[in-house]
Amino acid sequence: MLSCPISDSPLPAMKVSDILRVKGNTLYTVSPDQSLALAVDTMAERDIGSLVVMEFGDLVGMLTFREAIAAIVKNGGTVGTSLVRSVMDDHPLTCTPETEIDEVRRMMLGRHARYMPVLNGRQLMGVISFYDVAKTVVDAQDFENRMLKAYIRDWPAEDGGAQAA
Image (cartoon, rainbow, N blue to C red):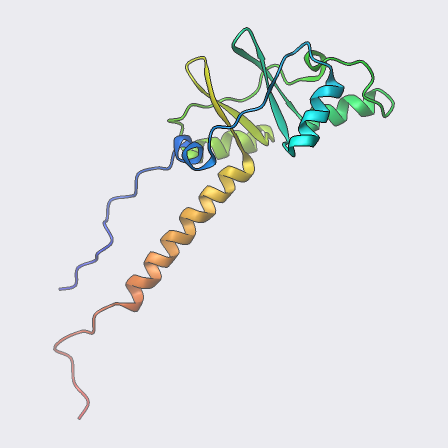
């Protein structure tokens, strides 16, 4: 009888905390009363696609290039004097460090969200992007693929069959 070295029990589900552990904890935030021009400058200078909008220590919104570009187009192609508060998403999707990656993927796809703040209670723990989620899923699939190929390659020869003479 052959035994399979790969367990029949599924691997523990990957969680947002797994992404944050690899990604690090650098966060960029902005005040809702900051000018949109300064926020866009920060995003371009730091090469980031989003800023978390914080007020009095609480998450109050999310500013991404999507909102910034929509505001610029609406203003005739200029940033003007708009404030972050007037263009931010004031109801962004959020998750916790314990949220499973599959659930995050479904949430982000459902709302076409590219960025998601991670909250532990009211404390901001980080921001994950759709790229972070996709990379995590692909890396996990690559690992599983390598393990299955190694298992197949090392499959033991069957005993008791007819042997060549």
